[in-house]
Image (tube, rainbow, N blue to C red; front, side, top):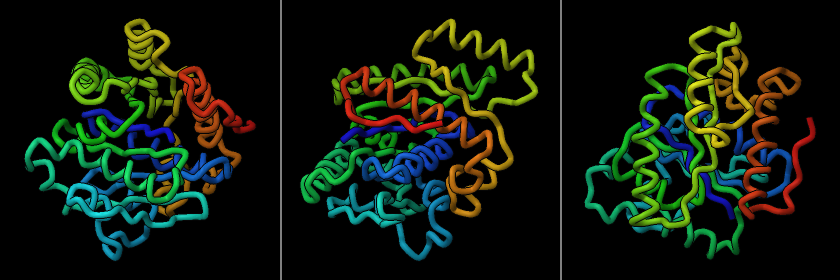
Length: 265
């Protein structure tokens, strides 16, 4: 099992888009079972998967209330732990709440015999107990950023939080990489400068693959379809296949998923 938290305290950087599409890309290729975890009270990941999330409630809340997790089946190879606004008060609970998500996910795996090969956790855009709970439960952190000055400025704070989590709670936590998201196809000068500064500061930690702004990519969650379902031959689907292949190579380099096949372009 590989657990990846998709995190950045900045909003609007594409965390949910990455979680939604990467989870479905892996599951649709039938290489392993995948669990998508919505750990954000806004419930955007849940709304991307399900037409009427109000009918199913906030299943991830069970983790923080010491109840068994009951993932919702999305497809043969994909399940979801949903979230809604009822998750918000968890952030105000005592500090011990940060350990509950990991415990609940571990118990779920034991109960089902290591059923899930991948778990993607979509984090809320702020620091706090829910954010720390996701980092404590993860093996890796995937960090989406936009090539804009204010988006890049907050990375140091995020990396400090990751380092503190590694030091005090989760010594095995690693940063899988930084994904440049929402890239404007017009090749703007400021955007190029921001990308260059990001690569200079963080080197190989930055993925070579980038996700460009695409109308189809913005439309697809409205229809509860991944970009590979909604526009399988389009450029956005190609972007995600490229990102996925690089992600798998990085996991392989770290000793995870050695036998995982790459997605063919």
